[in-house]
Image 1 (cartoon, rainbow, N blue to C red):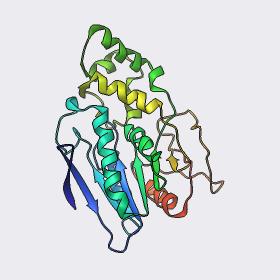
Image 2: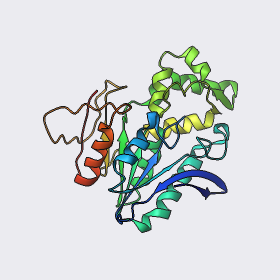
Image 3: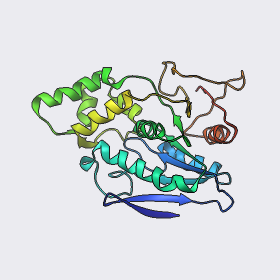
Length: 257
């Protein structure tokens, strides 16, 4: 059911669905930049519906996103970190295992939190090991510091940088939601640094569709079968199915488009 959490004085919109027979697993979703609790193309909602009989699910909008309080230009990265840690600390006492399912910048937030707990796991959709700080768009953002701009409209980067679309897709903005975002330059810099510092642990899994990236993912990849699984995350039920397999059978999949 939809509800609200009050974190550090900020009102956060949530959707918490409980299974009366479940006492072990809670799935929490961390969305990407420019997204909301349903996920890109409602992928989080699809996953929640697919595993509703196997786990409790918790979807929410970070501060300044979706139906939560605030505007994006009021957000600092530390605010999102605090929200993520608050939710894990609150609910971990009630469950044997928490699994954080992420996309975009949500992956960087979850990665920091997972390292603090032995019973918190991560599943990251389309995580890429591309270093944002090396991209042309990143260099353009840092140029703003020289002219002392505090805020940025992302549309200007699309006009100046050929890789701007890919840059924002990595951070999690889909369906043309990356253009026209107005935020602090400090938030963008902190997101880039946090994303580049991700180190995937043994309790984190990646579902990769190769939808965006040609670069191989550097990880310990376990492929259960030789046949290639071909989910289209944003159109079908394959990704929710794979998430269920990972959580409840401990499998790790690499998938392709």
